[in-house]
Length: 582
Ligand code: ADP
Image 1 (cartoon, rainbow, N blue to C red):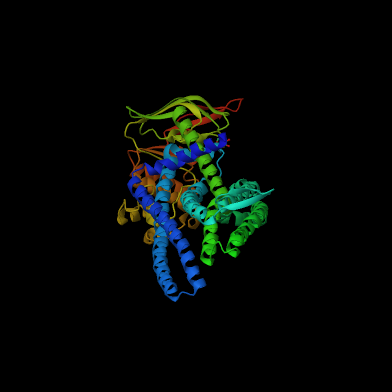
Image 2 (image 1 turned 45 degrees about the vertical axis):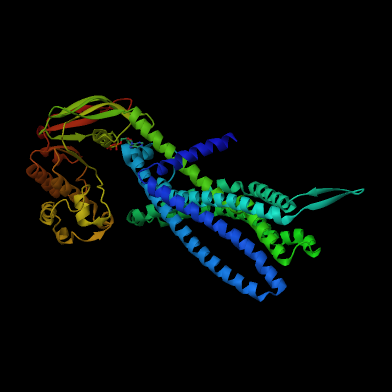
């Protein structure tokens, strides 16, 4: 029970925001119309139910006039029903997609803000496949929530409408007790329907409960499998070069084995539940005839009455059995809600961590240079990486950062960029200064070459002449005529070409501070030399801070700083001899 209250509270927290958002009036309006249409369907069903009585009596009495009148009546009722049914679905779907659009946008905002997505990946914060939460689960959540809540409402209204009818139709049941005594059960068909549905619901719950966990799991293993395939596609070349197909196949098989195993369990449970639900609804066809037959044969009711009882019983039984018939959907929906709640909590946790313990503070301050003070870097598991270090970089004094692989150079850059959350200390960046970080493997979005070059700005930010000129400057003349070509450029260009694209971006963005993390490691020394000369010449007001291993780089930097490891494996920043002199 406590669980249920808890769940209801969480569910409300998940559901409420949309209905109070800026889209609330459209949402509430649509919902009101959909509710009205649902009630309209119930009302039409009541009219159909009365129609049964009149129509079958006309058949029994061979009354032609009433027969024709009833056929006409049925026709316009049916026409009305069709119109209501069409718009009920149409507007329902419209509400679903509006709700989903709003939720998707909110989740994306929360996930991207404060670099929650990055922190969640670094700390592996217990939420699998965020992509699936945002695409699949939000879709299922909006669809199922509307479907189930409106279904429940219809079931309740149907139940009460038809209970009233069934009560008046069913008459009294006189149960002889022997010795001339008897009890009279008024509206006995109502009790019969009630007991029938209660037993069904209880059985469905007993049999169907394991479905919740299994559905939850199924979504997860499917997503893991899909993610494996996507990752494979993204790394096709690396795998091909290693001839890693056999290993990949093994891992696909393993992931699919999990899909298979869970599906098998799901199947078995579904089968057990279907025995119940199919059997249950078949029995429901014949059951009311059996129960009402004595009154028909004794002449207490006519054929019309019998047919109406059967239809009424059907409606009552169906609405009482709402839970039985929708159990697997409820199970599915509960799993979706649990996953979304888990995801939301992970987002909140990551955001709170980001806001409560800023760790390394990167702030804009007056002054012309970048000042790092008392910076200590740690790994996500709190292993220290860099001792408290301080460093001041003045504009124009280009710095080369060196050190053994794994000593923390890239992590220091991440800290300067303000994305590394583990550690303490302060980084002051001159107010208004623009910084640009180029990693070893640049990120290229999927799109036209123009989009790729202008990233992270929109594709039309620079005119074509500027883009062409930048391509020529970084020695990519063959790409000049391909600005409009769309594709997955990261798979098409060599690492060296990709790095040159990144340098072209730096030329376009003209940052005040440019951080190059082995950003020219994939081009030969001659081109590297040319690229650095280009940057120095074209961006005279830009201060370059580089990570690199080639000795030839020294010529382009005034200072050299090394990360040296002490006995405990912790690094510290050591100013080496002036680079040019070394
Ligand atoms: P460098 O750039 O000097 O080669 P990095 O800064 O990339 O080194 O990495 C420093 C150390 O931190 C390495 O030992 C690396 O394994 C570790 N490290 C980097 N990122 C992570 C991470 N996300 N989780 C755990 N360890 C990490």
